[in-house]
Image 1 (cartoon, one colour):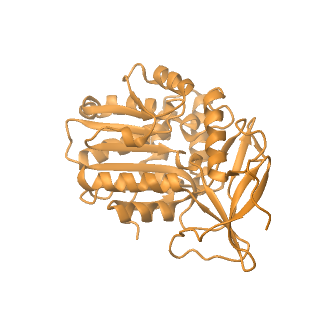
Image 2: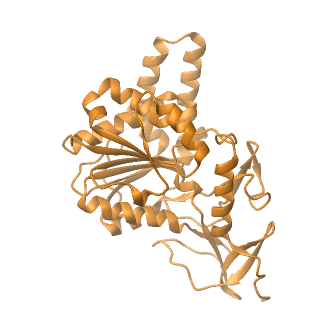
Image 3: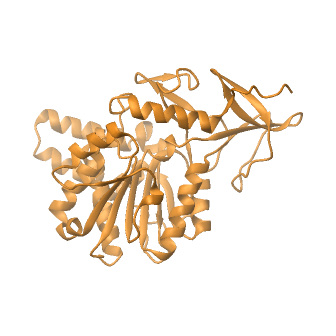
Amino acid sequence: MPPLPPEAERLDVFMARANARYYATHPLLSDFITAPEISQVFGELLGAWAAMVWVSMGRPNRIILAEAGPGRGTLMADALRLISKQVPAFAQSLEVHLIETSPLMRKAQQAALARYTHPTWHDTLESLPDGPMILLANEFLDALPIRQFEHNPKNGWQERYVQGALFCLAPCPPPVLPDGRTLEDNSVVEVCEPALAVAQMLGQRFCHTPGAALFLDYGHSSSLTGDSLQALRHARPAHPLEAAGEADLTAHVDFTAFAAQAQQAGAQTYGAVTQGTFLRALGLMERTEQLATHASKEDAAMLHSGAQRLAAPEKMGHLFRVLALTSPTLPAPPGFMKGPAA
């Protein structure tokens, strides 16, 4: 096998660099629409979820409500609107913290939340202050950089690097894989080390401090092989290695590996369940009907269309999954009534 070109980058390094440039320079994530922009009910339900978890914690008089990857601030604004109206005691006890590195996005979030709160921003989850915490993370894990590995009998394990707009391979030690993953020759295996670090950090935190975290993302409940790296440019699929920094790079979340890491660190895990199942359990259709009753014909149609897009199996309802992490002493959170993950 020829030596690795000196300019080649490991895939996770390439992905981190490309996404950092994309998020810093593109106007408010214009290449895709996330669930909070589809319907206000999405953020409201997550606000209700957080309020119920706060009650299960014993209603602490100070609690951190954090969001990782808060986008335009829409989710948090919708959540806080509901909380301030329906659970004012929770609203008075919470401190809002946002994990966001882009100055452009921070300005948008500040504008969206100005009437509710003055959030504190962080570059990483690790800098969040101590104390009881509820963390919301919608489409956060999918943007974290991944490594990709290939295996075949002739060359053994090799890792993918990026040279220009092409992949190249370099020999490597066997990667650590989740239990139960089957591997066929020439298949691609993905490992997201930053996601596993998040699971480890939260698991350790929740062992000694009351807390819960909710992750909504696209992926699979069980670990699978295959290349899931993808790119969106100008709202259309694009080659993931071309025009670095001009496209949003994502990969499917391995919820099995993420949950296993959190459990090993001491957290209790619930799910992953499908987004449709989770949102319906929280009252998606009932809240949609409640709003539609008092809306114009056009707005009611948009509310119903948004609910279907979020929950229908052929839309986002099946591809997107939901996983919760909690302190071991807390009861099962809303939306996960079948008990903890195995």
